[in-house]
Structures are given as C-alpha cells and as structure tokens.
Length: 251
Image 1 (tube, helix red, strand yellow):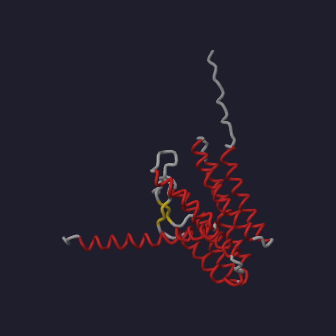
Image 2 (cartoon, one colour):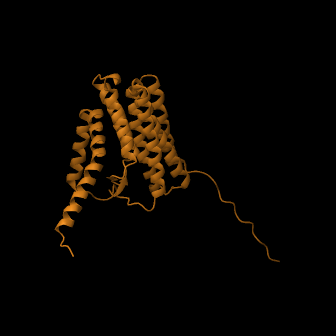
Image 3 (cartoon, one colour):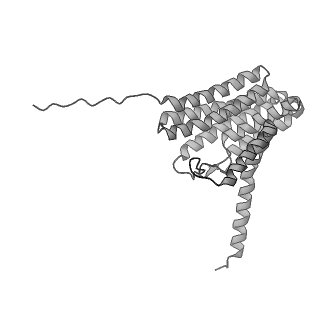
C-alpha cells in the first residue's frame, strides 16, 4: 500500500541578529524625537548619528551571516523612515523651524515626504539599478546634514531662532536632493575584506584624526560636501558629454 507523506510546514520566523541592529536604529530615531521635545538637541543629533552607524551594520551582518530576508528588507526601510525621515524633520522643527510658522512645518514635511518617496523608489529599483551609484541623495546623509548642523550650532552656542531660515533651506534642500535624479557614489563596491593599499590605511587613520578634532563640524561638512557632489558631478558629466559631441565629426 502506497503511503503519502504530508508536506512539511515551512518554519516561519525572523533572523534575530540583523533585526536587532535594525531595531536599535529604530529606537535611536525614536529617542531623537523624544530628546528634541525635551530641548536636548545635542542628544537628538547624536541619536540620529548612532542610527546611521547601526543602519550600516544590519545589512552587512545579514550578508555575512547569510540571513537576508524579505522581512528584514521591509523592516529596514520602515526603520529608515523613522530614523532618517521623521526624526530629523521633527528635531529640526523643534529646534528652529517652529519659529517660522507654516513655512517651518512645510519645510519639515518636504523632508519627511521626500524621504518616504526616496525609500519607495529605492525599493522598487533593487536588482535593476547600478549598485555603484544612488539615484538621489540617500536618506542617512540627508539626515546627517540636519543632525550634524544642529549639533554644530549647539557647540558654538547658536540658537535655532537665529538661523531658522537657514535651517528651513537646508531641511527642504536636503529633501529635494533625495528625490532628485542626481547620481551619488554609493561606495558599495569597496571590499572591506580584501587587501587595500597601505596609503589607504594611512588616509583612513588621518581621516579619523580629523574627525576627532571637532566631530560635529567635520561630520557636518562631510555630509554637506557629499550632498553637493551629486549636482557637481552631474553638471561635470553633462559638460563632458557636450564637449565630446562637439569634437565628433558630423555625418
């Protein structure tokens, strides 16, 4: 007599290790909002910076331990939305944008909506886009512009009321860059496990030394430089293509 075996049920669950880092990044964004409501803006900026480091680890840990999953990818996007979309906008609003009334909350909403659109576009392009580049400014460096800018101002004793319009410009500008078509280097092709030139190790050591001279200011300038690199590189490529077409003989 033939006996048919019942199909085994697929075991459901989630991978704990990478999702722990994602949860920690989510908590850091949540803590940043709480700190801003209490007027602790330096702590809020550090919390957003911590979320960036944690966000950089969860994906790498998932790949190293072979624990990638669709759940982890979706959870990471939701965590990014809170830590790099909602939190920076609310921190900026409590620090400076609230003084501008409707203009202030509009700038904060532009940033939040742009972060949501940026993440949605990124998720739909996974597997088809060139991994060497980002289309539009990624949400972590956009959040760094706001967080590190606020931290720098706090270090120099600058009140948010004194630079409210500048804060609105940076907040809305960072949001618009996220949904732009400018291309940014993703640095995903860097092999951290392979051999690197000795001079690169020296350069990294010097980079850490420069950052520790004044962390908030240096990190703010780094984030701002990266944000500007997209438009500058795009304009350079357009000019180079135009010059090449001019040099080519016409048919």
